Length: 420
Image (cartoon, rainbow, N blue to C red; front, side, top):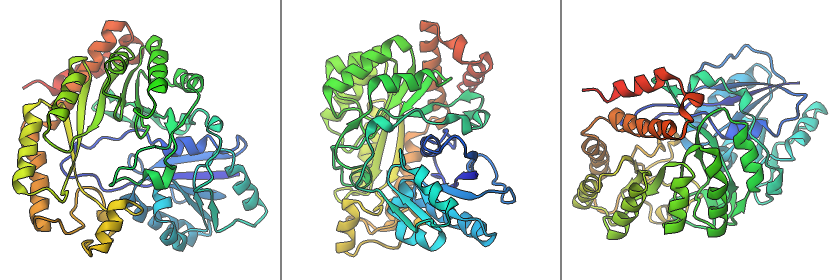
């Protein structure tokens, strides 16, 4: 049997430097496919899809709301040729009822230990329209190493600099943040993988730079400390979502190779100022994730927030506009208040205003979004990115891992980015 696995392209944020990381969902899914199935993988963000290639099944992996419309277009083309199509991924879970109009089948939930049954049904001509495992999570111990062999690794670099490889050490999230779909998708129970299994997977990744894509590392202090201690001997350099603002944990993270973290910044408080400072004092960069368009935001407060980010010398910032994605608490509230402007999913990128803000017009918020990007990156975004890459290269040189994992030309190209 031959399975064609496709990761559709999506519109990128207009002000953000475009680069592409190796996708995580498809390689995790591919690990659940039996070995006797031949997989051909297409990441449409970096390559064209071969619609003429023969396949017994097309599997479309969708992560984002703004990715799902392109997935439907791709599916319609293959189905017109008589090829069955199944959808999966968190984007599918958010839009499965609409997706049913473009698919022979949809798979909802996590695939470990389950996808072999789908293939058996296909072989026996009894493929179900819906495989629903949304509230029936598999044993976390079934999560093995992702199948990164399906990737064309040469496509994932930025100006010759090798991009990070994605990995996860846990699933689920005990927090319930109002703009987030995670409680609906992965549940509110923290489900950590066995740390030895995580280390085994890392050992099989031929890359010194990793991105832990866990929803938050700060869900269990004892687990977080154990993981960071285990990472120290590996001398990897890694990125993650928030880590606990605790002296011991921060020190362990720095020693374990934490390169930089994504940190939500929602106000100009001393708490945020201190959190950023404490990370940077340990040599950990901070990329702020900033949502614009909250109900307490007016024009002056957004401009003050941008000034604050410059004042605290934030390393990088990713500005997005509050977006009411399906199955989030904020969408429910905005529907009740009749403030959602449309459901053009292609524009649900985080870069377009799709709702009526509380204290300004949609056009004003859109202009402030562009103001935030342009003002913060008065120094080129490419330069700020290059500085972070030079930082990690110096760390690699200091512990002797640079020559083993990087090419001289990558360091040279990064250096060229910061030349006047």
